[in-house]
Length: 614
Ligand code: M6R
Image 1 (cartoon, helix red, strand yellow):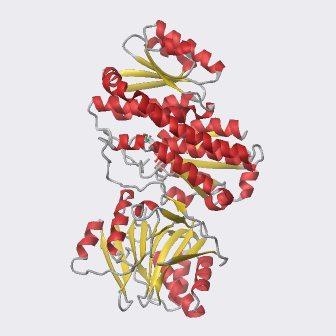
Image 2 (image 1 turned 45 degrees about the vertical axis):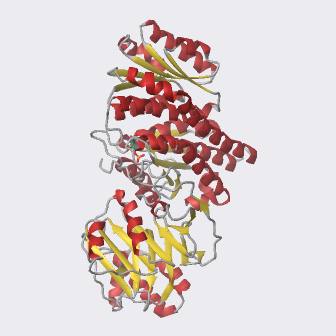
């Protein structure tokens, strides 16, 4: 789980590079390094250290190198031990070319043998060093940088991205991307480069996401981009909707609360980002148009909250683009019989892009040569690298263990994708596509307003009251059932109150036996009249047994409103967006319950943000 960061411009780059790497360090690493060109004589200077970034920073005290062009890296070892020699940057024979790299060069052994035969001398065990030596020999052969890069990428197999600086080209930085993300932050007479825009989000809001299989020549005042055949590509700049301030709660008591409130902006940013990709969507996400045109089946894979988002999205894909959609819980999928389905796309959904079960399920699907897409919030994640294509939510850094804005942006992105596939298949027109985008923006608005509407009463009255119960039941039907699952999970993880969720129709098949005045029943309504009537009947059953009802319902649903001890009433919306509209208030309510109980909300006991072990 490596990260790369680079700088070229009017200032000295080292501080930015180390700060940028530290913003990405939550991903884990075992060594770090920095290289730059001397500001006067352009000699390549470097410094590396085993372990944490602090170890590297400590070395700058006696070796205070810096320059106007520089690159940095945190390494998670794959090829070779986590030693200083194996840390990046890696170099060519003369130490005049320096490379930092993410990903894996799969044919590194074969290339190394060839380079050794040609007389190159290697110092590390890394696959990265191959890149520096190959650039050295290709430049000798062609004396043309672009040609050398084109030849180089044709020789490399695997998924990788790298940044290179060279003494011979002191005013430019070379970026190469294949199935591993890289982006450029455009500054004023300076450029910031990183595997994740989080690294430079405080410096600039203008970002250029390098397209898959492309390379860039970056100068302090301009960028050229080419595909792997050296065809120039257009420069498409995206506006980051936030400046991410990791580690800053912005006046909120907990990150979870801050993140609940960031949802409106995060949904806006996600929709705007996706909409801006329209013409080049499939190229950008790395899938061929053919896969989409011929799509007959979809499979969505995830764990925890991402699995709930998948289950909700099943309704999107089946209703909007008529595609039968299977949902896989990643931890189960790998141990079940797998039936290879052609004309199918497998979408791994994961906030972190690192969840071990989801990653292994993705790898299993890839081993059957089936097309895969990663929907994640972390551009530099392993899933982004390993899936055939990727789509990024724009939630910004989510720090609280309990997922909030990642969930709502997943829903927004999946709703958008369902429409985009329907559009591609000519099931809807451009106007319907635009309407879907508007509906998402409206849903984001309602999400935030509903928190404001009920905030006071929740804080003053409802949260202290519901914090007294030791257990609770959650009910939903149709699209509100997977949402009820998510609500129950949220309550459990932040408040430690036991919550059991059922499809409401199951009530009489057993759970009704649990209901009395000591157990609150949370019911999530739907606008569909038939489903609503059934939910009212379920609420009556619970009420008749003394159950205490909290209903999330819609304007005009008077019977349910009257039955409920606490009705939260939402304005009517697109039926498929009901879970998105309700998510902010649901999260806020459970947050306040946990707050009353004095729980460790951002880091609940026994839980980790990224579950990277099975
Ligand atoms: O990073 P991922 O979306 O793959 O994570 C999956 C689950 O571990 C995660 O959603 C977990 O359930 C959250 N703590 C829920 O709030």
